[in-house]
Length: 347
Ligand code: SF4
Image 1 (cartoon, rainbow, N blue to C red):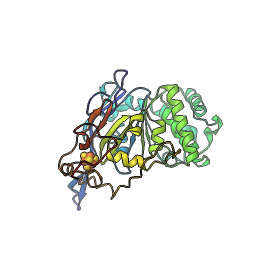
Image 2: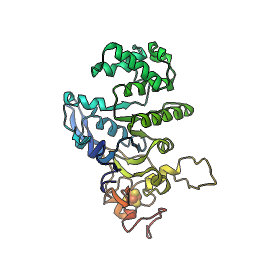
Image 3: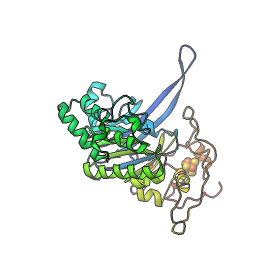
Image 4: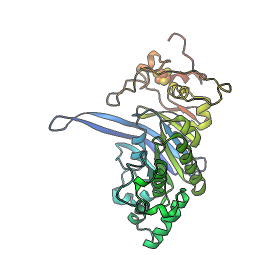
């Protein structure tokens, strides 16, 4: 953990990815002249780092902005504010041309493996495409690498001549992983990579990603709404709510000692295999995630929080380190850490 506003750090020196105060706002327009009448605050000041060979799980409900973080980090969307550094170099304002060398180092695995593969291309051509774009090797060398990549992701190389519709969902995701891996990236943004797959297949894909991480020292920004999946693959976890990180720490601390009421609610919904070993009371959140166009004042979570106090409606709690290595944005811990969470007297 580096400082109070940075979710997760790299103990081994310079992080591979360093995101500081990242913002992505989308204009809301109205009328024939597309007059801007507001802004969607999809990502509103997010900071985190990812070290080499490390997985940061970014978790939260649908619409919290986590996928927008992934796309903005890769500069598939231009950030509204903040900075993105890769191995110490600031890429925030680089032009598409200047971004090209960084695109090799940062690849994406998408949620829907079918939609992300061109149905008119053979699977081998899909995997080879990044090699062509980045002008890596001769055609024969590219074909050889594609065959090797197919083996690496658990597909028979002769399947490279088949089309996307001839593969199962899990196999299509393996093709997506092979494509992402083709140009030897260091960072992969995995955007809900298993949520469209059957549970049995999910485990296979997660295990494949973990094996590849071990073999190639890959770093993952792993975006998911599923805490059970995030617990399995992540070293560190950041919890997002309405465009902001509300809690961030190492995996064990987050699951053993959640310090933010939103994290507590998310965890209470995760099934526990051995009910005798740990008891966890189910906490049902009231209401929907508020609109990011007009987020609530103070703590964005106050309208749904069972612990909300008067000041929560007006004062926005900063993300700060309340236990070494454990950051949270909640007024409950202002007078010292409160765990398990308890309602303050008089609320
Ligand atoms: Fe709940 Fe207040 Fe903490 Fe927000 S700051 S999570 S409303 S207790």
